[in-house]
Length: 228
Image (cartoon, rainbow, N blue to C red; front, top):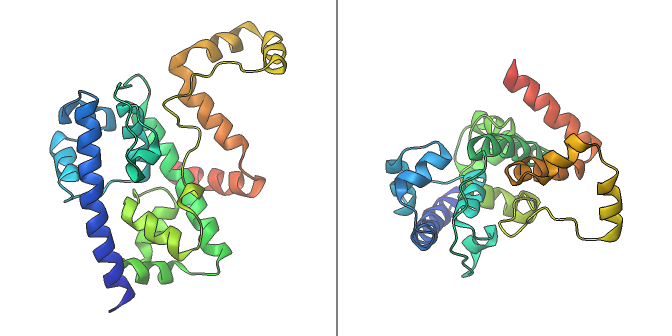
């Protein structure tokens, strides 16, 4: 059986499983499809299609769902559930930025493994131009595709996950050293850090600070190409 056929079959099964888990988490959080769609900037019909396993979901969309359902991202690979929803964050901006970061990471993993965009396209049975759009963050990467690419490129899926997006995180200072450093910050910075609405931006900044100079440079180049 061709490798691309195996990938497609696994993707179809993964869509069904994800749909069931998304629906379960949404209901546990007390949200309807319209509310979830509004948070993600998509229609309730698309949410329905995702829940029935007929449409793909991207990793940034899944990360945002984890936030509004107040479940850890690993819920979608496990049985853990937390039922309180969280809708107070800029979901669509977060997804756009995350998609670009994931694209940069994908490009680095591909070039590091010595593969071409054509090779990955053949694996997923899509044109190389689709892989290019994935890498530049111009097209959302369906999660089954990302999982297949992760396996093929021999990198763990956690390589792409945003560890900073954590529904249990509260941004609190946790050590005396942190407290001392915090006390010396300018007032406007303290105000920004103390505002829960800014937690997502802080998490993104922390994530970016962990990236290498080459990764940041590639991300900046990708953002410039998208902008211009």
